[in-house]
Amino acid sequence: MLLRHSFSRLPSPPSWISRFPSPAMPLRAKVTNPAFQATASISTSVPIPKELPGDEPDDVLFNTLYGLRSIELNRPKKLNSLNGSMARKIFPRLKEWEKSHLANIVLISGAGSKALCAGGDVAALALQNEQGEEGQRASTDFFGLEYSLDHSIATYSKPVISFMDGITMGGGVGLSMHAPFRIATEKTVFAMPETTIGFFPDVGGSFFLPRLDGETGTYLALTSERLNGVQALYAGIATHFLHSSVLSSVTQRLSELVFPDNLDLPGRLDAVNKTMAEFSLEEPMLLAGGLREAIDRCFKFNQVEEIIAALESEQEQKEWAQKTLETLSTRSPTSLKVTLRQLRLGKKWGISETFKREYDIAGNFMRHPDFVEGVKARLISKPARQAEWQPATLQEVSQETVDGFFATPENQQGLQLLSEGDYNRYPHERFALPSEAEIEKFVRQSRSARETIQHFVEKSGQKEGVAEKVSEVLARRTTIGQNGLEWR
Picture 1 (cartoon, rainbow, N blue to C red):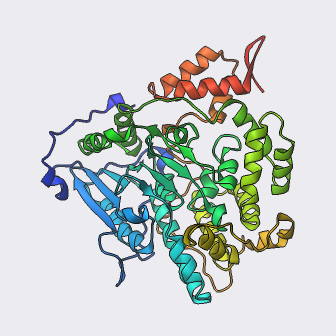
Picture 2: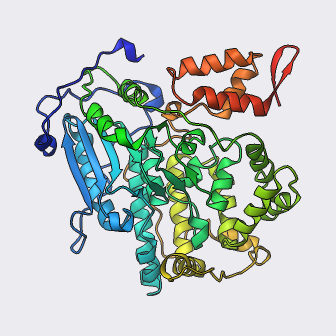
Picture 3: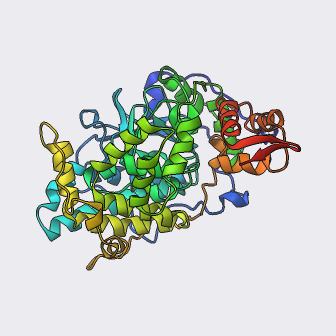
């Protein structure tokens, strides 16, 4: 437990010191908790990507503040969209910091006030794909680079924090979702918008989306629906909700944490979590009640046609169902079918298999006309227009076509990851709000509503948002029986 370990604060440094390492930091501790044995150092057997001639200068900024190492995506005019140049700069730094006894925590943020990262630079990829097979292969290589970076973050041996301040979509989600701490603010706009451009929710979406409560992940993946602010916390995307005005103070506090030499990784994560909790806020939950019931009711099927039929028959949330049907009608039919299959299969994939499988799927999408058409229609054409999908209807997308997206494309080698770490559930998932599955397990022990709420509030260390979420789940999923709460 955190209280059994001491950690202290250092005096505030002058601003000029941020580019120099702190002279007094503890040695890295051994990882002794079995839950974190899957976390592995970045491998040395696969070459670490390095910068190439022609890579943009200063598109990523790196800074040091005592024990904190920061990665700032620095393309604000492009909403910090991730490209190969940025990824190639980040890899060596992660490797360096993982070895360093002076580096305690890694922080990922975005320059400017609008976005952490609005996604990958797909406009450049679409134009590249038009060059034929060579361009498509180069685009696929970018996704391999991106997925390897995401996997390295997912299995990193030190605490990683992402400030999801502003737009956090696509590639920005990949840099955030696999970190132990994901900080939403009032400016957060989360989405996986891939089906709007003839693609699929990648960057590990196969792993985290099916593991969200109920059919929330399926809904977000197929519709590209946005979650604003605190709603990312309640959905399980973020681990904390803070006001953007305190991020600089949080950064300062994190930099001042000094860990004892014998404190293992889980203990260090607990210390970071306690620091975050001091700044947390609470606001009402929107993706709840009847709407959540409708999402689970309509998106539980394994065929897109069945989901559409359920939406057409929906009576309790008619307005929402109609809006959702209109949204789905504009999405790539191929993307919808591949995405639904991806989510159902992804429930059983470990984190390593996830990125390897997604690499194959991405390679096949680079060879499919919908990706170029979707990017041109939505992101390049001025004004944006409705894409002309090939094929144009769900009925024309055969089972054979969907199956083909999950095969390794010809002349494409499998993805080689730079870390050997693997797991089937996030080892740091306890820092998010309790899941419905956790609440159900506790309720089935015949607990009262008051006892259930109290249990999870105390377990979380009085975390903001816990009582609200547990109360909502109990109201929606339980009834009062002779022996107390009964799950339904």
